[in-house]
Amino acid sequence: MLRDQGKDLKKALLLVKLHLFIQLYTFAFIPIMSTLVIATLAHSFGMLPIYMGLHTVSCLPPPVSTAVLLSKAAHGNELMALWSQFVQRLTVDASVMAVQNDATAAAIFNSVLGSFLGIIITPLLLLSLVGSSTTPSLSFIIGQLILTVVLPLVMGQVVKPYIQKHLDQLSPPFSAISRSGAFSRGDIVAILFCSTHKSLTLGLPILQVVYANSADIGLLTLPLLIYHPTQILLGSAIVPSLQNSSGTPELCRKQIKEQFLVDMPDDFTQFWDLCKSLDSCHPELALMPALNLELVGPFHVLQGQLTGVPWQQCVLQDRYFYDPPEVVTVLRSDDDRGFHLGYFRDDPKSVDCLVVSNCANVDCEFRIEGNNLFSAVRFLLKNKLQDKSIKKTKRQELEHIESLIKNKAEELHLDMQEPKGLTTKRNRTINAKCFHKIGLSVPFDKSTEVGYRPLPVTDGELRKILDRIAACSVEAKRPSLMEPLQEIVTYVQFANDECDYGMGLELGLDLFMHGDQFHSLVLNLLPLAYELLYRDEYARIIKEHVHHRDRTPLNICVTFKTV
Image (cartoon, rainbow, N blue to C red; front, side):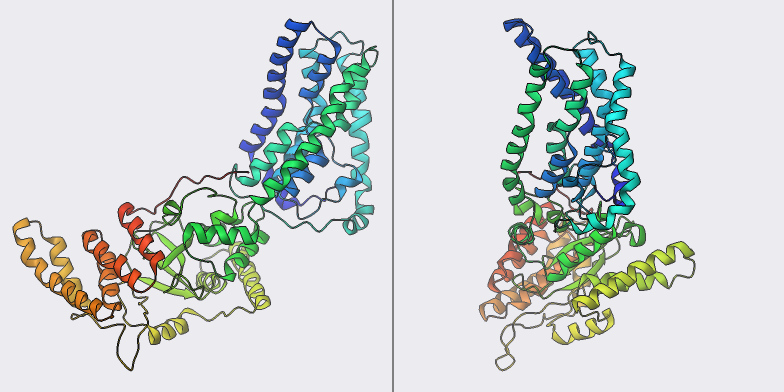
């Protein structure tokens, strides 16, 4: 018997769009298509008893056991599959009892809902498609099905509390795969099995009741007896392919590297697991009630999305106007400030990251929030808890999440140093502040003073030069205003010749952070600087960003494949 996870099942219940798709496909599309095929066959070969058996198969709901277990094996949303059968049986046989808390909402809901609906809808479909020539009345059929199907299941629920502990010990060690958004990869897997599989355990009682006095009961049963083992064999055959596309940690890490051009630190997947514990149906939205933050960017890969999307599009996913190539956005708010958080690293080949934040609609300055997502989010929670106007229930929710993060971080031995200390430490290691205030760090040999040389102007002086150029509306005056900037560019060329590559990086970043008026110079300076510093990944990212740069965060059409 499936242990019901109240919280997960409740959230699964609200996924109306997905439920409607599965149930309409099961009880409308397949019967209609079956009717058309059978009508064609009957026109050619005459109406045969076995065709009524095909009608019966087409009208049946999915089985609880195979739909859920295959969805789980393929890393789909098995709770959604099970829910689709909920109204058929509130208890199932022992083999299904083993699927437990690790189940996710999608497969469970639709398997159970579909089976329950099948008790009523299947006889009605049969009577409408095949005819009402059978002896038993509709009320007799429904009554018999309630006695033979529903009553035993209700009894199973009554005895459930007394045998639950024993059933828990029989649970196989499946790991939880949570659902992402509507029609995510996990949902597609649940749809695949829930919409096409047909229930033998419900089909046989229906056949015995509806066609109780038929002399052709053997032929009527034959299609179901063939279809049932066939669906298991075919389902089992495609599970390995689905597993390979499901996003195991190794595959996800490889996909992120290929599509975002950088590796994610260990706390990335650890934080995803924490969010799944908060909301297994929508882990990407787990922080929305408390902090108005959504998990984005590379987290889409953990949701089973972005498969087959080229890196040129992925590096732009959730990239904000002022995000330099060193930043990969992983959390974003929908507020008017354009607030978002991302991993920042100087070298794309490193996983030593800081978590930084920026309000893209306010300015180009980034702030250090932590050295991992746990410390960054906890710091934001602690700041929010200082608001005395927060209501008691909201405060309790925030304190609960803050406590979970703290305990998990201690369990993982994560450094939870606060931003102030990290900022001080960062300032000791950088070569220059830059307009974005996080600073840049390039290899610098102190003995030879090779690797970086400062710009010939201060940040304030450079900003004034750029402001005057940007504000100039008279084209004839622009060349004279550009002269100081062109002189600085000349200094950069000399610096590059003498291996002081950091100077060109600093100027390029400052031009980028000033706005979109200097893109031609940015493309001349930054890609070359990154390539000279062996940071080619950033050279590729900045080219894509400049070509598609926009004041609103960039997003792509999130697509995914199930196989």
